[in-house]
Length: 177
Image (cartoon, rainbow, N blue to C red; front, side, top):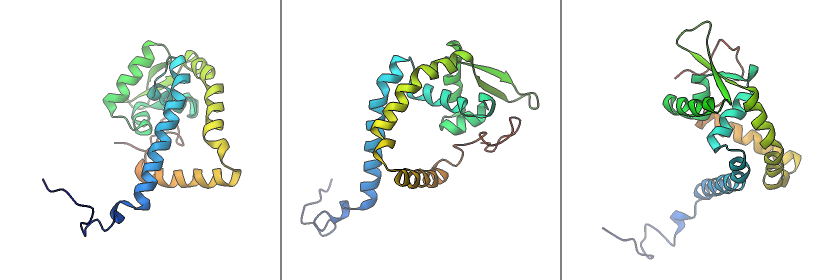
């Protein structure tokens, strides 16, 4: 195994490592990890994991508080088996329920229940305050709008199905695997 020495011409005084792309992704990863660790006590107190919360909030913000299982998988970035496991767990806790799709017997919907909405309503006030204190409140209105535009631009490339089912009628899907 070869070891690069500090005076190795390939490294040229560590310029190889002084790259704004590495800085950008490093800062993004640090911010995400830091925010998630700061948000987790509130989620844990409500008996929700990060993926549980993401699933419930995506359902709550969707038309009819329901999504096709395939769209829920696409939005969360989970595999079909992964989203099935999450929905199974949430269904056992009566936070969601499954409904058959009237127009496609192969498809089913995940629907937020009253208990699921109540669980979100318990956690959201503190979660929103944490978001304000640790994230959005640190930015001015114009900075926040520009930041949101930038995040949407990146999301469109890295997770094009992140809004699957959110802007279509309940019997259609915008992003099939």
